[in-house]
Amino acid sequence: MLSIRLRRIGKKGQASFRVVAAEAHSKAKSKFVEDLGWVNPHTDKFEIDKERVSYWLGVGAQPSDTVADYLKKTGIEIKD
Image 1 (cartoon, rainbow, N blue to C red):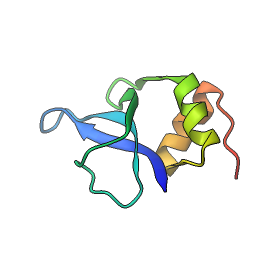
Image 2 (image 1 turned 90 degrees about the vertical axis):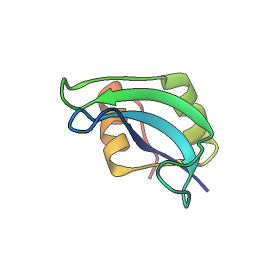
Image 3 (image 1 turned 120 degrees about the vertical axis):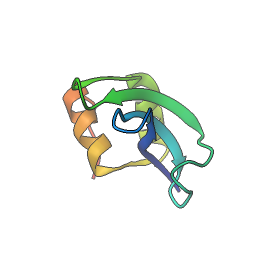
């Protein structure tokens, strides 16, 4: 099963995140299937590829709670 989740990058104290599609039971720093965007919580800026996220949601990927909040901000509907 795939999940859409955040992957931490950046220096200590300056964390930023990549939005990735990855296996649900894989480790946080392991390989991922596809890079879907980025999030910078310090500046509240983010960019997500709506088309690719919609594709992954269509094939059954489940977003994490945090990613689901960002998807709602971009206007992507999430099926329960």
